[in-house]
Length: 514
Image (cartoon, rainbow, N blue to C red):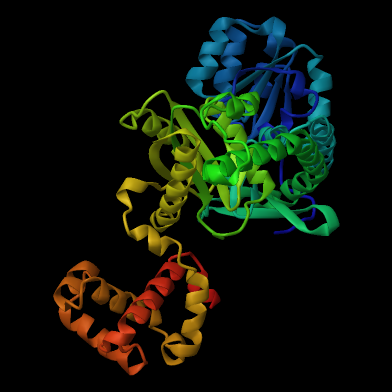
């Protein structure tokens, strides 16, 4: 994408963001993205007859007398495909507003002198780079006034209008409009890296510019680069404001975990799990642990085992507290823990409602959710947390936004804990010929399906949706490449290897990187 200033003509939306039209009242805006090529100062009806397409028509003197004259001017501007009509307030009437809406033509009302407005507009339209420089300066002032990441992205999206902007961290949208990261054939993306401490990449600003307006990429890139320092300042402020609370919550949950897991004989003084000793400090955080607890584990779909970035933690906390204020949210290891507390066991209806509320957020930020069982007291909460984490690991197979309940998982939870990355690395050594084959993905998928079906080729072909002979030929080729599973002593190990490879290759781009 080119970064030099754009020389393309201005559109109406750009003119509305700088003086003098920034002070104008928009009676009707049919299409703010309409290009503007010239200014026409129309003093007479005869002048209205010579309007060229994509003009800003500024009415003055006889043409701005109001009443039927404004109606005639609107008709003339519409017939000649003008971009907008600008009229003094004294000439405006309610009937003219209705007419502008029916004709689908933009109509603005000004309090300034029409001649001065027309001269200023003519200068802006003849030198679009200068007009955009003014916009950049004004936008820089607004960005500097923001104290939150959401505020910075709000300024960018307001300024750029039909060009969506998003802030992404680790591939997840943490602020702005998700449409910016969506791949579209008629759009071109502008990306600007945001570096944190030590010049390490922290995040990325992404804007989606329509292809017909791709020459504005330089202007868009300029605004994105201006937003980097305000973003870093807002991020640092947010980190300072929440770091103490996050540390307190983690320490409190670790104490809960210790109380729920240590045998009573290991403590000099027995702890009453549901009594005053546990609630005295947990209540300070608004936590309820007495009664029945059902845990939720939220985890990123990618990079299992790695601690999520702090920015994603802050975003999730804010969203969670907005939708589910009575449920705690605590960062822990490679995900986040929450739980629902109730006086007694229920059917899970309240949990389902809460999970449904958070599913769109999980899908947007590439997260999955696991739900544990309902158990009493602090020990029950800790058990439910382990169950929810197992369920979340299984949910990764379903993709972003997936929700899995532990009571639906069963023994499959054991597979979710396998270190698939390390097992897949073993395949590079013990199955070198297979790993070098171009069709390795289909071969592994076929053998895995055959093993899952107990060796039945017919069942495997039905599950894969291919002919039985295709399954047979793939199995024969896999055996030629070393994937021989007829030996009972090797079958379990090869089954696990195939499962690990299949699980790893389901991640986009994982197979290509090997």
